[in-house]
Length: 176
Image 1 (cartoon, rainbow, N blue to C red):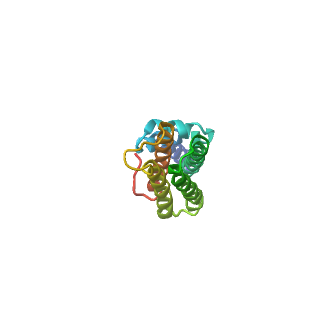
Image 2: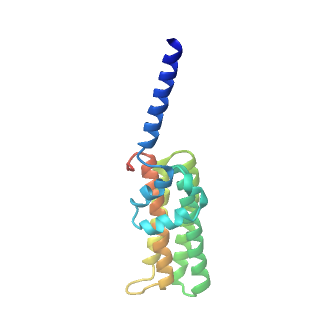
Image 3: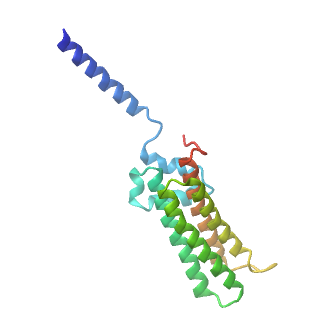
């Protein structure tokens, strides 16, 4: 009698485990979609995260690392664009602002690693502000080159992904 009870108990435990696993709210593959739905540019988010093969089975921390790497590359590319395409003194301030953005993004790596989501939010918000300030640094009625505006918008979108991930990790945003 004891022998069959153990098998019944084991079978019930197995069935319960299968039910729990099949009713999970989302898998890691869906985590990219869950994060990107919360961002200001879901398409940019999905494309940037999925460009890294680690995103397939990633948790929020790994998605954060991927996003920080992407934002850092974007900020460096924007700064390089400023250096290569521009000869005006209006852009000196932009170069300084992108230096600050790159510095802020670099600090995000340490904040994410130490689970300091308040600092992570502060640093990434600073990087977003730096990019935005560059857009407005040309003076009244003066527009910067369109490719710089595009680079700024892209960087701000990439930084927003990090904000969503940070807020999710800290519990401010609940992913479905």
